[in-house]
Image 1 (cartoon, rainbow, N blue to C red):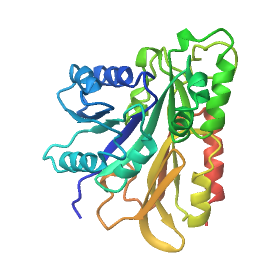
Image 2 (image 1 turned 90 degrees about the vertical axis):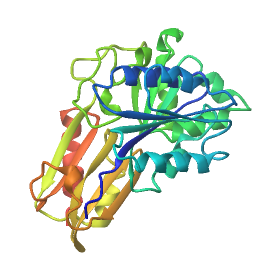
Image 3 (image 1 turned 45 degrees about the horizontal axis):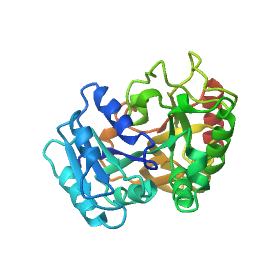
Length: 323
C-alpha cells in the first residue's frame, strides 16, 4: 500500500483565560519551518482566538459558536477531512478547543480517521487560579475533566502565584492527571518536541516541575528526551499492552513497530496520555518509521520527561512484556 503517513495532531485545551492562544502563538513563532495548520474554536459568534492566531499563520480554520466536541462536531470532522485530502498536507495539525469543551472528546474524534495520529492532549492550566476554578460549583467539574484528560499539562502564569503555592498546585495536578507530563510554560514557551517529533531542544525557561516550594528553574538535564528500545524477540500482546499503559515515567508519547508471539504480522503501536492504539500493518506500510532497517526487530521510541534511570525502567518494563 502507498498510503500517506498520518498527520500528527495535538489538541490544546484548558479553561477560559488559561493561556491557550499564547501557547499557540509561541509555537507558530518557533515552528522552525514546519507547516502547521490550526483549527480554532471559540465560544461565541466572533472567533477572537482565530484572529489573534492568524497574525502568526496563514493556515487557520475557524469554527465558531459552541463547544467543538458537541454542537459543531460534524463541522470539525469536515474540516479535518478537508485537511487530510490536501495535496500538500501540513506537518502538524493543532486543534484549539474552546475554554468550555472537553479536549479528550475532541481527540477521540480525531482518532476515528487513520489520516491523523494523536501526539498529545495538551491542557493549559492557570497556576494562579486553578484552585478557585476547581472549587467553583458551576465550572469545577468541567475544569477537573479537562485536566484529567491531559497527556501534557502546561502550567501558565506561575509568576502570579502566591509564595509557597507551588507544591499545592502540583499536588492537585498530580492527583487529577497522574500520568500527565507537567511543564511550566513561561510566556507560552514549550519544547517543540511536545507537539511533534523534533530535535529534543528545551527552551531555557522550560523545565519539568518538581514538587517543592517555588517554581524552580530547570537543571541542565531537565526537559524532554527520547529513548529507543529494540529487540529481536516477540512480545506477548497482553503483557505489552499492560506494560505500555503502566510505565513508571512521565511519558509524552510512545510509538513503534512490534512483532507479537501470537501474530506474525508487524503491528503499529501508539501510546498517548494513557490511551493506546495497536493495529496490524499491511505489507509495505512501514515507511513512516524509517531508521529501523527492514523491521526484522521490534522497535519502540519513547518520548517524555525522564532521566537515565527512567530509560532503564522503560527497558525493564519492555523486557517483562517479551514472550
